[in-house]
Length: 185
Image (cartoon, rainbow, N blue to C red; front, top):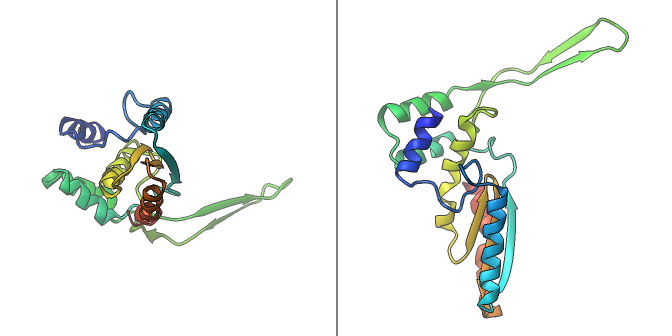
């Protein structure tokens, strides 16, 4: 399913070009190069530049299933494809387990929590997880105006630039809500 989804996203040019994580022929090196190039271009234009660096914590754990399914639908994943993703995401359960062994003895204790249905998150360790995460945050650049973004999976660099320091300060106040927007995604 990963290959089919990736092919669909590429064919329809859906994933933002600002995303460098988990993308073919892109890397931390190309992301860094893009970031540096954006800064150099702004400085060449005599602009002041401020970088805001964000790291979305526990990115796979916070994904809202319904919102992800809505985003897939908005990108054209409908019908059987959407039903497959719905089945993949919903009614998943998880539990915590601990095994304790006593030193010098052949005694071991096992503890396990009760099973809970997950309403958020995508399976970690799967090949599909990173791609679903990219789909989930793909529209973040549409919500951040007047700045340049460089995204690498769950890391985000927001570059705010202007020749006028007062205008830059105003832009920064507007972008102070970036962290709030990311947490709502």
